[in-house]
Structures are given as C-alpha cells and as structure tokens.
Image (tube, rainbow, N blue to C red; front, side, top):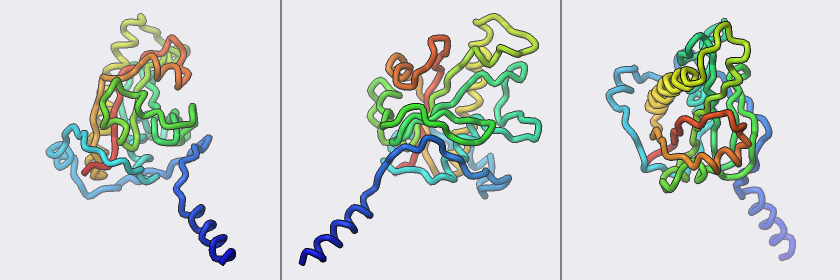
Length: 216
C-alpha cells in the first residue's frame, strides 16, 4: 500500500503544470510560408477580440507574433515594420503567466525581465486581459537615437514611434488572424505600475498594449 501511495504521489507531481520562467527563451524560426490564409482573408476577418481563454500559445505561435511585432525580415537587419530614419526605437515586452520578457529582435529570443504573472498590470481593469496568453507592451526608448545620423527633436521622436507602433499592432493583428487567435489593441495600461515591475527607465515612454490569445 505504501509503495502504491508513493508511486501515486510521484505521478501527481509529474503531471502538475508548472510555470517557472526561463531566463532566456530562444524562439523557433518563422518560415517564409506558414499559413494558407491570404492577406485579404486576414483583413476580412480582422477584429478586436475580448473573449480569451486562459490557455498558453505554442512556441511557434509566440515566435510568429513577436516576429510580426518587431522581427527582422531581411539579410541587412531591417525589420517587418517601418521606422523613421531606420531607427528602431520601439521595444516590445511580452507579458505572460510566467513573467515579463523583452523581445530581442536581433537574436529572435525573449529575455526575462521579471518573473511572475503580471498580466493584470498591463491594464487598468479590463478583466479579459488576465486571460490573454500574451500581452505585448510597446515602449519607446530615446536611447535608440544615440548613434543616428540625424537626431530629431524629442517631440518628433515620440511621433515617429507612435507611427511605428501603429504598424506593429496591425502586423500582429494579421498574424494572429492567420493563427486563429484573437487580439485587442489597448491604450488602457497601468503605466506607473508596469514601469515599476518592468524596471523601465524614466526616459522611456509606454505607448500601447495588445492582448493576444486563444479565443472561444
């Protein structure tokens, strides 16, 4: 009987899902053709979704979403979305049940910033956000302009970043649609709290949030 109980305990422990955050996640490569859905199909069905199911995405889906947000699509290092003067000043943070990650576009990987489920911090009260598998936070950083051939006024830098973020969220929306996922672009963010938990420098500007996940 003791042996049976001991074996049962081991089986229970092995079947328990854990959500320990990894310090670094290398994402799978995004293929040149990963969907049979056309751009027209994706646009036809694109909409904001809020009926998320609290279910994780596959690593391939996470890779596609982040690549669409800020990935590299050319050999010269240029990215999926446009950036004024070629300065990529918008960073993408991925907030999952495991933690807050910064997307490293150059190496197509996620770097852990803070461990724990901070999905609720990415909103000011929208309950559906806590069920979305990943909440993307788009953050402008003036540090990106340090070595630029021309440095525009700060007001212009923010304006350029907002244009880039607009392109980013639409690329993610289309990718989400091709993966059968829902998405919702949001301006409602607990900016003070997110800045604190993500350890953001004061000179960085939180622009937008976007919830992506499995829907009913």
